[in-house]
Image (tube, rainbow, N blue to C red; front, side):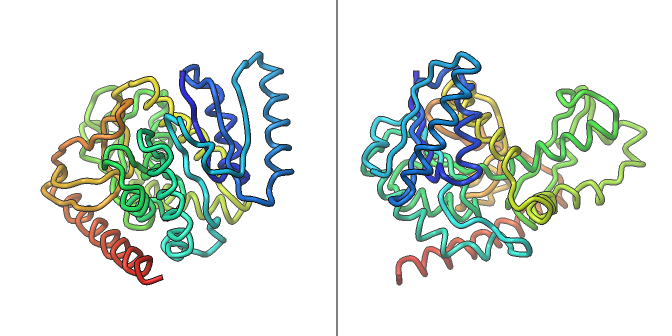
Length: 316
């Protein structure tokens, strides 16, 4: 049985993640961590969640704290701490402010819970994953980000709806930045095990329109309701379960790549990775030539922003 700590538990995503993670059978304890001055809110969240546990017969142990030392013994640490993205604001605009928060958090995790696995949710998630990896001092496989996992699920849902099939019949991926330069892998998309380009209906598929819907999904939700909560919360729980159950599933997350994708790498970015109790392990893949070009551009964008943020952190 495992302990999961949620850093930034007073935010919308952190709070809902506690609820979704509580449904994972491998989890025996959830720790909600928030900054000092948020004690009443943390206690209220705990009480509300405990009521939901009582209603469904969940015996999970739930605690809250403002003392970072209490994360000791965590198996997985979910980091949602940071400033939320405002309407019209890009993920990269958030970078430096959130990097300061993540750097300190990662240092603490590396000192207090060095054997844990860190799941980074804070945006811009690819850059923040690199910051967490550097400042925690932990091995690359121990630190990964939500990345393009949710984006891939959004595309999967749209494709299933278009072809009128169950979502489980669709396998597709979006790699690269969790942001504007993300890359859909149509070359790796199948329906019922059949390459999508071999289906006659593919010629009528509104590929660009569908991709734009995925790319702007987060911004649209933020504009309409203020924040994205349910999608990220469920995606986080999926990844936590995959780690704790040692499932060895291949999901598309932000992880440190070296040469797995056409020898492009040395950065944290969304790629297919095998995930288990030890962490994440990027899977070597080959993709279409046009996708390689797009992915290379995405990597260079993230690398440039990562280097800039890390340099500014060192100066501050």
